[in-house]
Length: 152
Image (cartoon, rainbow, N blue to C red; front, side, top):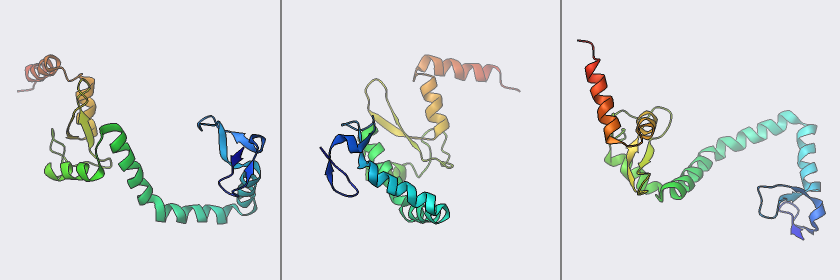
């Protein structure tokens, strides 16, 4: 037996569609409530689009911040306040190239061996460092290669 999150009725599992992402492999709304939501869109698609658009406009930043908080905590064990403090300490720029982030926020760089957080990096520096496996020999060879082939 499952309780529908829309109508709050307790029904047997046959009244719920499959959803393999859920623990019990069933959707949280019963088939009846889902079909009502579908007809609302079919009856007046423009009105429904406007309703969703206005909801996203009011909730969009809240949802982004909620996701950002969750991701920081899950991936780096950092709170949003700790991230913002690091960002402030770095004057809002990448720790390596000293450029401010463009559209994306600065990434939390971490050591893959120890899992310890380091500093905040732009996407280019973070990706480059990862592709070089944090290997000082490769980084030094790359530096020497660039120096060797610089135009004079």
